[in-house]
Length: 479
Image (cartoon, rainbow, N blue to C red):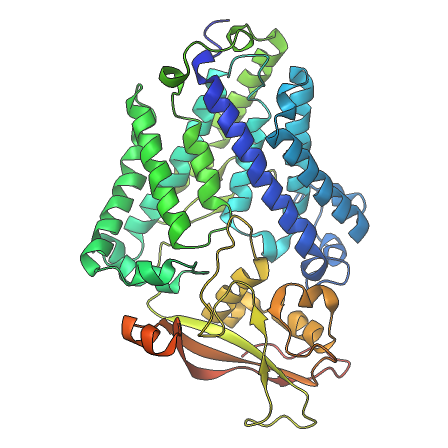
């Protein structure tokens, strides 16, 4: 079946599979290292409590059958190990069916985690990893040529990621149309990186060029993915360059790296590599061809919802239309904040909490806190608590379910929770009271940075959570 495979894309497939497996490694590592405090049996949003009222059909997961922290940890570490093996090329050393099984196990394990992850796993890149991971099951291995249909389906995902993000910007905040959003974005994004201060201080004409280039990358180049080569490769490489710019300017977990991975699958490396290996030029088994065709039909049918969303004037971002996350809609930053507020959490050992008492600040790993601390690079690793703290500063409604339990665990000196933060100011005994205050943050100027060494300037805005202590009842909710 010469029509079924594209042997010239064998290197593109190899790069795609290795990179995707690498993304899976970070996803599973993050789950293994953070789940106990977030969704474990004694976590802020325990999985057993969630599963009591969510049926299997709404959240299919292995943990619907049985849950324990040990089982979750085993699944997460097993997923990380399997992903590492695939990144090292294990999928090309086994028969086609076995390789497909390995990718299917990865997808099933991560689906099981996402579908019980609740608020902590509500980000668009979770659905994107699952959608791309599902297609990777049917991409084959070195014993057969890359199937043309799956390669086109990967481009269809990339198109929706970029074009959906471009549409939501043009329909959303007026600053995107005025080319002024990046006057603010590098400063107000969820988790700035070590270069974000410098990006923010670029001249305003450069920020306008950034905005214009973003529109071209997200609204023009995605259409070019469906044109003949080398035009499609040029469009894909332009997307890679844009994503690398985003990697340098902020921390967006593995979203940018996964988008780069998708884009590389559309690049025709044939002119650089010469003839493909003999195995990649061979025919595909009939059962494999039938399965790929069936999956293609399934994806096209399920695509009606994302397409309807994209053409709708009320387009929404990052939504899954089925519990398996097979075909989703994407988008980001339809609105850009002009100011940055941060929730600063403090504790005291005083018997009676006073405004001028000995309050000591908890330090987070990624989110802004100490003004003297330069932002750090964490992506593609995802600091889930830090990201949710950004949402909590936007509105207490985003934190209603988990912020009170978080404070309770600080008051109890919970070891798993303290592992999620960088600095615990109470190493010997937990505090008697914890409070939270809202601060207004901005990047310092060049002069302020030289004179003070501070990357941020901050000032108090208001109380976020009054002094709270453990007293048998749950901690107060943020105001």
